[in-house]
Image (spheres, rainbow, N blue to C red):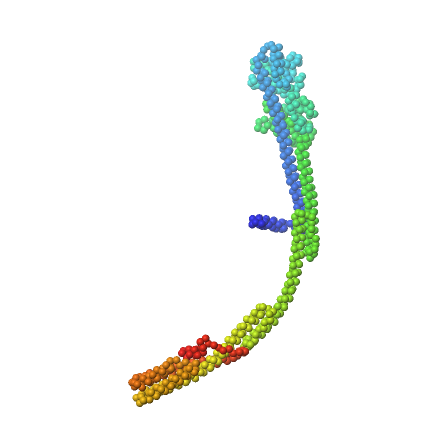
Length: 640
């Protein structure tokens, strides 16, 4: 695992611990201890969440579908109003074009009739009849017509359904007036009247049938029970789509739209749209009236250039049937999803909880000491790996326990061995302690015994015995040294006293010689011989006593002898030399006094050292050897 993976894992563990800590403070303990209950609560929350989301989504889909349906009906009203507007505009242009011909000013009615038929043939198929009307002061009449009705040509226009033309108000010469729907022998028509350009009192009236335009309505196709109507400003039905699905015009044409003011509100709303940019509208809250016996939706749109309004009707049960189906399917789908989550979750939760409970029971048995419990499962998911992990942990625990038992047995054996070693060490320590106490008391003859049982203890004993051997040897040498020092001090003291006496005698003799120089010239030879004899004696003394070192004294004696011999030859020189010898003898006596004092001091110090060393008990004495010899050491002492 890389450092980044470790950091990610640690970050994830930290976040999980933080989330778990928060939940632990909120969730009760009895829920946290029961996995099945926790899983059930989670499953319930999931199902509830899915249900709420499904309901919300279904409601949104229903609202969206409903808006789409309403928008469709609004657009349908606008489309059909646009079709009617185009139809009216087309017929206006056709009527205006026909009225612009000069032929209509002719007085030949036969030619005019022929021309009317020709023009009708050139018009659209829904052109029912063309009439040339002449308006008079008292009455108006039809000059010529494509209709075969004799009543039309023989009766005043005011007595027919075309009387509206006599009351029409043309603002310009090219203006076209559109009538409401009226009945003729050929069926319901809409009249389009336009002044003839070549005549001031003649008008072209073209009547268009409504069958074709009524057949273009799609209200009954959009929804079961739906229909389309065109109503004028007086709330009279101009065009009615048959509700049985047949072709032609329905029975409600030229009938009042409704006596209910609530039903006529869409008409007023459509008239209000004429002065706005909006082309259509829709109302889905229409109550059941004489228009429809149940609640219905109506889309409305004004027809520009007229006071007509297109109304597209449909029962809400048909309009929103698809919406209701969508809502129903959405609710069913949500319910199935909730049931699926609940069912699958319950199965998974039951299996998981059962496996975990079984594993918990087995771990309880392991905790009670039963490590032979069977921990196995056929699952290969995380639970299965958990079983495998616990099985491995059980095996590892058994192995560790076995190893611990073996280690315990080994520890017991080691402990017993350690106890034996400890007893042995204690015993040896006591023995060594006794030897050390004897040694500390001055008995240097005791030694520590080695038995080869413990290398460390044997090494201590060997090193201690070696140390005591060296100490014993050193004590013996010191003891010998002390004895030799005491003995040498006595010898030096005796020799020094002898030499001192001799020096004093020499000094006295020299003094006498000096005093009696004049009288003993003859005796100088004999004195010289005696002095030579004395020197020989001193040399023999020094030679026989190595601890006595007379040093320059013998040389001075030799000098005195030589001087005496010279003095014998020369009296004057002898006197001077005699004085010199006397002085030297005095100095030698003083030096010998100092040597005697030091020898006495050395003897005094050597005795206490010997007393102390005699307290140590040793098996053998060892001779102490100076590096330069004792005579040399004592000589150095006398020189000092």
